[in-house]
Amino acid sequence: MIRATFVRRGGTNIEMIRAVQPLNAEDAARDLARRCVEGDRAAQTRLFREEVRRVYGLLYRVLGPSGPHEDLIQETFLRVFRSLPQFRGDSQLSTWIGGIALNVAYGHLRSNPTPAVRLELVPDTRVEEAGVEQQLAAREGLRRVYQLLDRMDPRLRIAFTLHAIDGRSLREVAGLMAASLVATKARVWRARRELDKRAGRDPLLRSYLEETLADEPQPEDAA
Image (tube, rainbow, N blue to C red; front, side, top):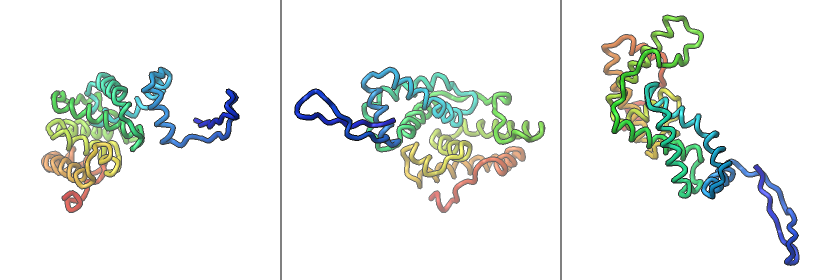
């Protein structure tokens, strides 16, 4: 996207282009948000198309494969377009939208018990070239992880899934959740500790945690 700067000469209606400069990413995001607020349907469609896959990915990782993703995507973008007048560009637009998506997911987890994750719905992540037995073991391990996450505080679940399953840095998770880095580390560590307790009695779950999921923060960092 480019920005054109115009000047008037001698009070006439003739406008001359003084400079044409490329917009940086932050300015482009603010410009897109402004046009959406002004009712530009093309801008609204562009924003939705650019962000919908990212929102879906966030919701999928947090809720697992059995979540009502389509309904929550709609709710997320309803809130996004209602809240755009308050967007000031202090963070990236995608990060701001991600925060709204997580608030939607958090509200859903608090008010709706999640149904058991069905084995056939769990994606074959990170095992594309593995044998059939390894694929099934990985899918079953992930299913058991989500079963345990269903019983956790939503804040622990969200922090853990974003870091350990989605692979985001702790700092990025903290930004998305509008939480301190210390609090985020503590949430991930507490969630992992709960999973490890169950894994002590479940060899398949223990194997999945050790081989697949990101390392947990150290307890001294989570204090």
